[in-house]
Length: 195
Length: 177
Image (cartoon, rainbow over all chains, first blue to last red; front, side, top):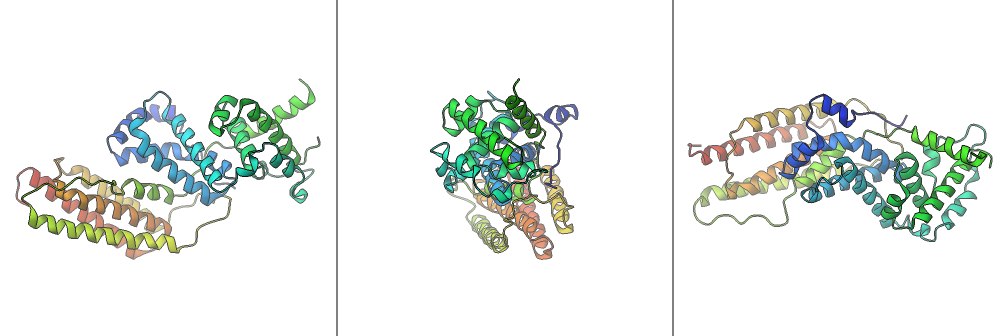
């Protein structure tokens, strides 16, 4: 069990008469920590899920990244211009913070050459593969190399477009597509599917 | 659609069906709050003239709050961090955590009931330190649930913050404190 829980989507909050994101954001900009806490309660579960996956299911790192994200967002909030939804803005900040954390640990360094890590993974730890039943999908995603994992999580789970991923990860759109293609292939192998 | 596309689509469907939300550890917000309430790099300069006697008192109070905050921040740092990857399933918060959160709710209600007024510059550092101290204690309670000492400290800090806020409000209204 992964401790997953659903929260009310934004429109449910609206129907319940709860202040919308823009109202809370303006109050938080004026210095209201209480309003900011409501923003946190509303968006943290969504951000934590994506951070946790990008961090390879490492709970302590994910918690640190979540904390950094919300501290950064508090400081950057006065510059928020409402050009995008608050949730979108927060998610981009969270992803950026998670990627910075990976880079700081050197986890992305091996991936700069593009394919090397993916090829390496294909032959690595064959015992972790589980033909027939297959590995748990979450665990299998976590075994992907960091950059490939980030592309897969953002595209296939979070629904980002390749140009958005490419911009965030500082790579070409073609590279994002290639990483996704190979990440899916590796994932299928991890899940014990035949080629 | 060829076989490869179909397999990609099937995998993508399974990935899309993964949960999009996870509840972060309860202590995470308390940790964020500690940093939000940390003093800004540049504090406003105290006004010149008047209030010298009370300024010294508030400075002492701010010093106490800062010391308490520092000491309490050491509590979580001494505890082992959870390094295991899977997130734990949500559990009911321990009694002390529930008490602390209830206390915070009551404190906020009491604070909201204090008439709004301009806070004198010389009181701001003490208020900031007390807020920071309270947030640190709350974070420590989440880290080390079960500590009655921390709960008492939280109650004491909230009481001091309320008392100081009320005095500031009365002073701003020209009423005796």
